[in-house]
Structures are given as C-alpha cells and as structure tokens.
Length: 318
Ligand code: XMP
Image (cartoon, rainbow, N blue to C red; front, side, top):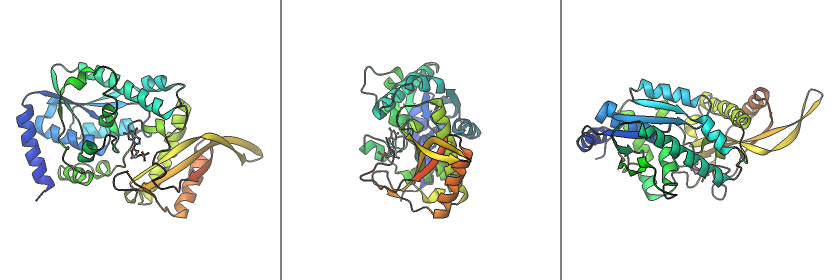
C-alpha cells in the first residue's frame, strides 16, 4: 500500500544514493509541486540543493516576499531573484497572449540560466514534474517546469537544460503530492494553494500590459482571495482569480461621470483543470467583494462574475 511516509523515506534514500555530493539547481515557483520537490531534495542533500525563486513582476500581491520568507523558514538554500523590471520591460507593447507567453518563457530561461551559471559545478536540474505533466504537454500547475517545457524546443538549449534531470514527484498525482508535503510537516496553506499559471497576471491582463495595470490587478486579486479565505471558501474552490478587461465603462461617483476599468472575477471547481465548472459563490460574498474592490481600488468602477464553464470557456481568459 502507498503511504506518504514510506514514499518520503524511500525517495530520500534514492535521492541520496543518486546524487551523492552533487549540486542540484531547482526553480521554485511558489506552487505546491516545486515546493514539495524542494523539501524532498532538501532532506536528501541539504545545502547542495540550490533553489532559485524568480520574481517576474507578475505574481500576486506581496507573493514574492511572503513566499521567499516561507522558503527560508523551511531551511531551504534559496536565492530570490527580483527580475520584475526585466520581464515588464520585455513585455512592453505586447498584447497578443502567445507573444506574452513566449516572452515570459524566454526571459525566464535567460534569468534562470544566468543564476544557474553562478553555482559552481552544478550537475543536476531538479523539477517538480508530477505524473499528469508527464502525460500532458501543458502543465496545469504552472511554474518554471511548465515554462521550460513549452520552450525548450526553440533555438539552442540553454546550458541548464543540458544538466541531468531529477524529478522526484514524477509518479505522483496532485493529491498525493499534497499528502507527501503534509507528511513532511509542510505548511497547510502552502500545500493548499490554488494553481497559478506560470505567466502569472500577464495572461489575466487582457491585451497589453503596464505596471499600473499589474498594480490594479494585484489589488483586486488580493481582495478577492483574502475574502475567499475569510469566508472559508478558499478550500472549496479549485482555482480563483481576477481578470482585468481591456474595456472602460461609464460609472458615476458623486456628481462626476467616471470612465474606468472593469474586472471579471472567476472561481472554478475542477480536478485537473481539463474541465471546470464555475462556482456558485454566495450572492452576499459577491456583493461585499464587489463593493470592497470598487471602493478600494482606484481605477476600477465595475466588477462582473464569470459564469462560464470549461468547455467551452477556458479557465484563463487568454
Ligand atoms: P485554461 O485557461 O487552459 O487553463 O483552461 C487550465 C489550467 O492551466 C493553467 N494555465 C497555464 N499554466 N502556463 C501555465 O503554467 C500557461 O501558459 C497557462 N495557461 C493556463 C490555468 O491557470 C489553469 O490552471
């Protein structure tokens, strides 16, 4: 019978044997898979695991700082690299979804390759690939591994891609990954996190991106997610987030007409992201969340709730 404890014990032994004194580099995304993979490797090889956590400037509000602290608290040998400006500059003027994805993938590879080169004699690249990623080419889990996979056939391989690959979660499903993490006493909030796409908020800002739009969406998203948590709805939802629409609409504030942004909230139930149903969130929750967003986030005067299921609507809008 499969148990998380036995899996941890066996995997740590196997990793010790396989890796010996070798150095390993791993890209942390803040997501469940890369975090659990890192913890297993940390148990096996300690400081020889070099984790890199890249801020692409498209993460949720305060996410980079909070998660980096959390990783440090777990004892991981982690380096946070704030490459926000590099990503946002590269994205300037780009509105097409695939172009945005490609740009983010390319910059990520450049940043990661630079960092990997700083580690002397690194031998292995670790990835948080899980079993469904092995079968599908597109990862629903987001993160560096997904980004790398969809771009490694473009041009010559960056040097870190020539490293030997170690993927300790390759045989596991998502729920098993969570159980493995729990058996290593990892934080339940970290293990229960919703999936978040590798390109982050870039594909939730429809059309072209500016720093101001990123800021607006981070504020809106933080209100929505915090409210889901305080209403005990977060764990009942598979994934949630907000989309910043490329339309302005007319509103009224005092005696003034406003002409400001519209955001769409989306929350879905799913098991693997392949199909999804919109979640019937309580009206009172939607009402309060909408009021809070409009009152607090300057530049937004309208909130709508997405009631489309997948198929045919995808989870993300881009
Ligand atoms: P869709 O929008 O295709 O999303 O219904 C299904 C799942 O995949 C995530 N997603 C991505 N993850 N890079 C990623 O790492 C991407 O480009 C990407 N696009 C969508 C999405 O958040 C959902 O969990």
